[in-house]
Length: 209
Image 1 (cartoon, rainbow, N blue to C red):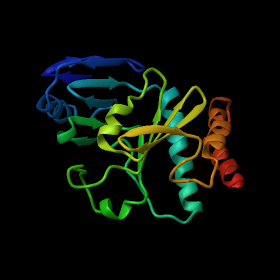
Image 2 (cartoon, helix red, strand yellow):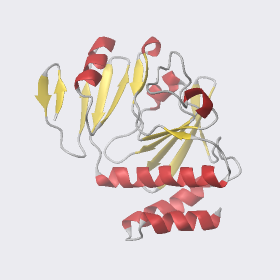
Image 3 (cartoon, one colour):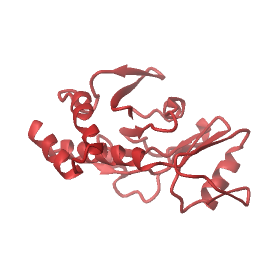
């Protein structure tokens, strides 16, 4: 159950709602009233997109995030996992809650943060989206200048790198240029729906690094 302008609204798992002509204050009020919730909200240029995830959405998302952690640890790099934190910037009239997000190069700048204000801090270095019932809108991430966005859909991984106010699709990751993460994820993640437990997939991933 979520609340829009003090009125309850039911959204079933897998459903999506789009609300137009909402001001920034409307968006801020929405976040404040619906602080404890199980869905994702994306706000851009006065339009609010609300998605309620399915298990089909969450399981690949969590597994890919776990594989990113495995890879970062394997490479001996420091990082911080910010999950589906709300990232917003009023100056760009944009706010988003990614499925997963990581600070890697800029982890030291946000390591003591309890709240993220993108007017003061950089955006996450990497975000992950798992698309099932809705499609990720890159415009919001472009407004926030997120360096790298992964979109997993239909057992395929698309990698987008931010450059010159736009996103370019890439076969390689900017964060992991020497690892074929696209092939590894496309090979291993679909196994989660064939009865292979996540723990075994993570083990197979480590063996192939």
